[in-house]
Length: 51
Image 1 (cartoon, one colour):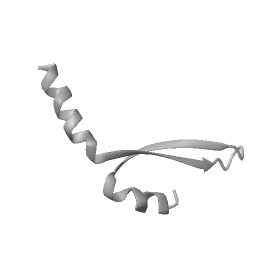
Image 2 (image 1 turned 120 degrees about the vertical axis):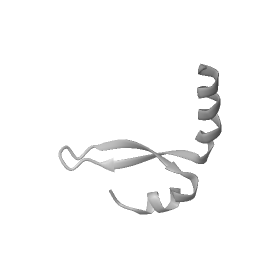
Image 3 (image 1 turned 120 degrees about the horizontal axis):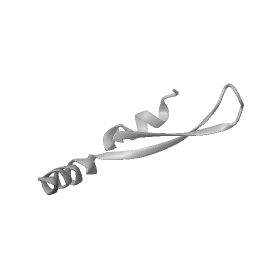
Image 4 (image 1 turned 90 degrees about the vertical axis):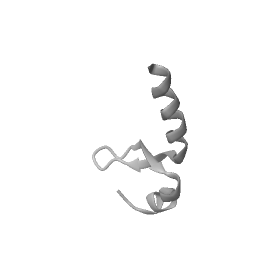
C-alpha cells in the first residue's frame, strides 16, 4: 500500500518547483528565507510579485 503512495508522489511532484526567496524583516531588519512550492509555469510570475 505504501509503495503506491510513494509512486504517485514521485510522478506528480515533478510539476512543482521549490522557490526560496530572501525577504527583509520589517521588525529586525535582518533577512529571512521563505520557501514555497510553485508550479513550473508560474515560477517567473511568483518571483516578480512582491509579498
